[in-house]
Amino acid sequence: MLALVSATADAFASGRTSPAEVAQLAGHPFSFALPFGCLGPLIETDATRTGWRYDADRGALRLQVASTRWAPQDWFGAESSVGVEAIEGFWMTRPWTSSETCPATKAPTAASEPATPAGKTLAIAQLFREGGARQERRDGEPYVAVVRSAPEALRAGSGFRVRLTGQLTDLPGGGAIRCRQPGGPDQRPTCLVGATFDEIAIENIATGEILARWAGGSGVGE
Image: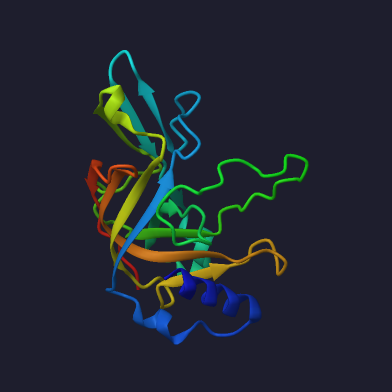
């Protein structure tokens, strides 16, 4: 999937048509795992960020995964987004690697060299129609779980990951991948993968244990 997204971004930036495989992705199952909390706990509770905190006094592990809500026009423009009320999903961390664990390098190797932020270049999301059911929508609210855990069983040093499972769906205009360059031709294309989420789960990377799970909503595309 990552290779196909890269090929689609290349085609978009070069003015070519998307790879033929993009039009054949709808209905294919997927499972993506996005590591988080790799650098340790959040300094303070922040409802807008993805991360974790541990309250040793209560033996409570708080996990939160930020969801993102986009206006349909952000990705498709006014004409092609008619009938779509909202787009909700996740920015994919470190889309240049297929690894499902935290990176081996946890700090810059040379403090004197300026860091170049990777930015947000790949998202996976589902579309909701106007007039459709709203109970499955997050409206930008994070997924939050509080899990009881003894300190010796926490094993948070390897971080956590959110696992997304479901099926790929076509986006307005056709194809399951859409790219754009709002900053112009010198900007790396930003791409969206259309999906229907069956389940969103949080896993402990060190143990593989599922700590929390939510049933996904019903996304739609055309």
